[in-house]
Image 1 (cartoon, rainbow, N blue to C red):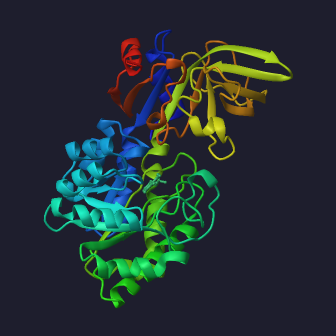
Image 2 (cartoon, protein in one colour; image 1 turned 90 degrees about the vertical axis):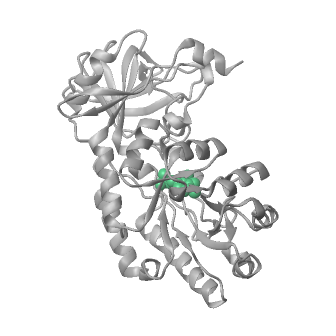
Image 3 (tube, protein in one colour; image 1 turned 60 degrees about the vertical axis):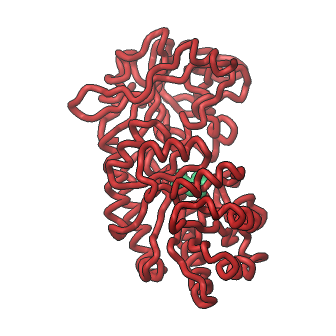
Length: 413
Ligand SMILES: Cc1ncc(COP(=O)(O)O)c(C=O)c1O
């Protein structure tokens, strides 16, 4: 983060009240640094289609586009959102399950489309007449590298629901480029979180080898889409890991930087995760069954993955005084931090060594910029929090209002 914990805490404290006991802050210079780091690491012609699913807040989407990046859309609504913010030449439509209407819309709009499977290619063939001139259409493949560290977000094991499995259907993939002259792209995304750089580089190598095979068989490749999946450790900038990744690719898979195809990346988590913090008031504390529990306003509605898979999705928690100053790290004892939802698993930290916590203190939860608000749960009909963009020396700017009761009720109409 470019702001210290104290600055973040002091910014959040006056924003909190009974009506708004939790707020999200996004470090805008950090986001801009991540985007600039990505752009600098790769050749200038690369299309960086940043995954909307990681954080679709429109103010941040505009930051992405201003940085020269494009957008990856994985649903019909994400596609419409992308078309309203970026040029079609910079949009990639990757929805894993597409209706014919979705396909027709995407074909007519002129965005890049990645089909998920061979049957989808046959469907596209019957709809290709509705495509804008020179369609950019690719096929997602599964290079079958095995499971990453996190099963639920791994996609390159045999049996994954994503893409065409290369161990069983490689020949059909290569033949598809002869059967469908409009098919000119290859795509692979091997997982999100839990896949280290070694595995990511292996995935790109597998894609490059397949691309050579397609070319040798007479196919033309207009785009190679290497997906996202860069892991995020801590709260520092993602720029160094982008530089490492690109340097390794240049050394180990130089073929993807050669030739006349468009190189595409689809980063999500590494662009946004380390830019966001949630600050919640502690509404109460209790000791029961040998546990100390802090009752807070951040729970499984924001941190869905953390509640269900706490070892895979851990967030640092800093205890702040009511006016936002970090407490000394002394007298540490194990604390559970529980959210406001009606189920016992609504915990965002278990047995975490933390300093003494009292009602009225604040908790700052780190690394909540990606796959958090975009996964907001409607359980218990809780209102989503206000989101503010922050930068050193400037007043916070609104990115999203605190949802109203009426907006929540209208969801259920
Ligand atoms: C096809 C595709 N591309 C890109 C991403 C973004 O991945 P990450 O956020 O790990 O960079 C995802 C994430 O689910 C995805 O499914």
